[in-house]
Amino acid sequence: MDYSELKKQMSEQKVEMTAKERLEAYNRGEEVDFIPYDLQSPDPALAEIFGYTTSQFGKDIDAKIGVIKRRQEEFGIDNFNVSLGLKRIGHSLGSVVLAPEHGIDYVEEHLLADSYDGIDALEPVDPYKNDVLLPILESTKRLKDKFPDLTLSTSVAGPITTAISVRPVEKALRDTRKDPDNLKKLLDICVESSLNWFRAFEKEFGKTNTGFSDPVTCQDILSRKQFEEFSLPYLQKLIDGTVDIMGMPPGAHICGKSNGIWEDLADAGLFFVSIDNCEDLAHAKELVGDRMRIAGNVPPVNVMKLGTIDDVIASVKDCLQRGADSPKGYILNTGCQVPLGTPKQNVEAFIYAARKYGRGARMGELPKGLSD
Image (cartoon, rainbow, N blue to C red; front, side):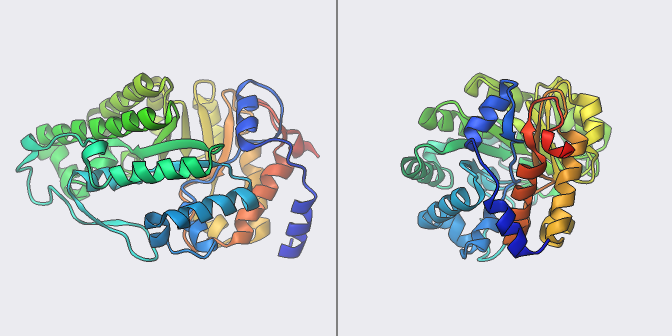
């Protein structure tokens, strides 16, 4: 399919619900116009599609407003996630984080780069007293005023992923053997800092959906023993604390191999798990689909960025066939963050395919669009 044909067919599709209405009806077990869909951390890529730099989107409230407005009008995305990303808590604790004009932010200098000197004096961050987090709260207030009907949510990094924005990853992994006590102190500070952010968010905006991304907790990086000692207990604290604050558990995205910890995440009370495209949605559905929602997993690079319109459509259809009848529900999504350089036509192809093949979706059933 070429782009002109894609645009023609999209113009003929009927959208009968807002994203909020669709998700609420889906959660009630009702049939919806088409499957709920999302894009994993899309804003940097969408900002560049709409003519802004990633730096502008990160710093300029007008750029944020422009991106939100256009993605709502053009892509039907009427929610906005205020994400602290993988490094913002580390930045707020004292690491030096830089954001290039075009690209993803990175840690230039870790607070605990050389040693744990000073960790006993390090305290969880208070968003209302922090020069990194307070401006994010203030800009979110302005966005909420501008878009009062926007479905608002927020997300942080998982505990051990947050920790490596304070302590370099190779040293943190070494600490699991050489200095576990100090690493655990750091993990507790990371969890409480994230929960403080959720507390501030709930105070300002009420109870909202939350989530976390935790690439370091995957099986490609942590052994089973490391996961059980240095990740799972702190994930449990984050999940339990989030339930206390928001009244509902968070969802999570785990990059890389994660099938060996899905049951642990379900046991911990996670609401949904978003899995990388290296994992099989059908396997996730079989293993934990009756205990938590699953999401994913159109390949972000090989399909969304580098593939054709037809590649995107085929991948969406395949994901729906593998995961859409999961008992606790399924959200169509990309397998990881939408990459910078993803063409607009491929985002549109994703949405077109969600509407076409996800038509007539209901929790626990394959959409009617797949049988057309």
